[in-house]
Length: 170
Image (cartoon, rainbow, N blue to C red; front, side, top):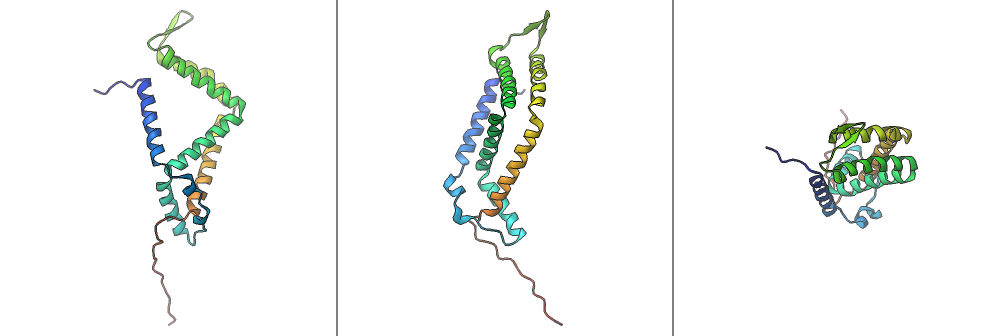
């Protein structure tokens, strides 16, 4: 039988994930070392660079995406309010009302119904704040920045020697 997932176990899982990301993060001086940036000579080389750099700098790229998310939230006041309302409502349900049921118009709401109520209240705020377009902007900006960095940064591995086909005249 599976163990029940509690809010504290979610927090513990998040802390473990963040600790793992932090331990795998490469130094920023190495990440931005300008002497290692060059234009790839072939598409195949660019592909190898992207794959290798995504493996090596995965935690750095995750942090860049998180920073882009925070930039979007902080620079959009309505989105900041929407995230605060949704997060605050979920926090109240998870920690403050543990085991308690809220009564509205004489009807007790279960925990799932309470989360539904928070969603119902915060959804119009997210729509007004253009949260959908913000999510796609964050995804696009992350892919662009990460792809650009990953393709331009030379890997520490020596380049593979590729066989070249030569054509002889007949």
